[in-house]
Image (cartoon, rainbow, N blue to C red; front, side, top):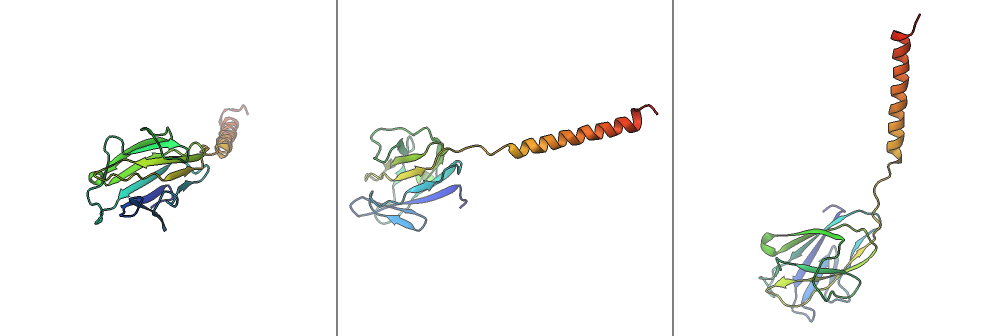
Length: 168
């Protein structure tokens, strides 16, 4: 896993919330303690890989193929369908067990998401915390390189001119 990819395991659970969420070493069993997915400021876009685990509670749960998640700004569970504009794209793999989203991380703030699972009804609504303000890399060094190359070309041109074209 690269630092630009976050793996999140979604585990059907017989507890009150119906889900466990595992991200790194953190495990949450209810909306109040689901681990948040944190992206730092200016850290660029990130892939989030969600995997629904098979277990004795549910071996048939899969992501809804039409719209697998609702993702909206804020820290409350989304109440209508749609994806926030920071989610540039998504794709489902492994027979509906894996969902990959591309979060552009362009605006700071929480994104709440609600998993839309087929064959499993409990609502799952954790949070992605975007640091935002992703800025392009500085081009200051490029200007120095271009300036240096231009200066070198000028000096080389002057040398060639003096050696071969100057009147003696």
